[in-house]
Image 1 (cartoon, helix red, strand yellow):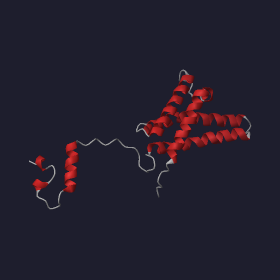
Image 2: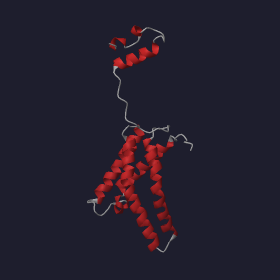
Image 3: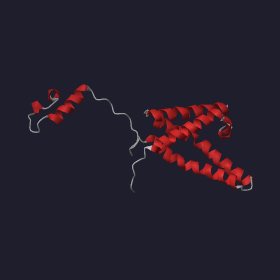
Length: 171
């Protein structure tokens, strides 16, 4: 299987989706309230909080903050059950509505969104323009280690041990 390099536009598409959705969460929360499970208290506040989270993730992705990719992936996973509920509700609506084209289209769109979250998660976890994923930041090397490393690369290949950088550490 051939792996193509990731497009630079994928994270920006997710950023745009977060920006639009985050604003809609705050301006028209009633659109998202039916997606909140009945067992959870205060659905409007949950919708507002998720809208703020989407806007925060969008800002982090725009700023290329290290936390933004993992936070965005976590947010996408957290809202997945709501998207599943939306697809189930749309399917029920299409059946009860007699299969009207607009109802069927809404159900098809809702179901199509579910698998699309996988490439969205991959996009936010991959640094822009590469095929690699975020990893933990490397531990900063001490000045001594940096100097020793530099010395190893600059010394003559056949130099005696005492001429090696960092040889004072050898017993």
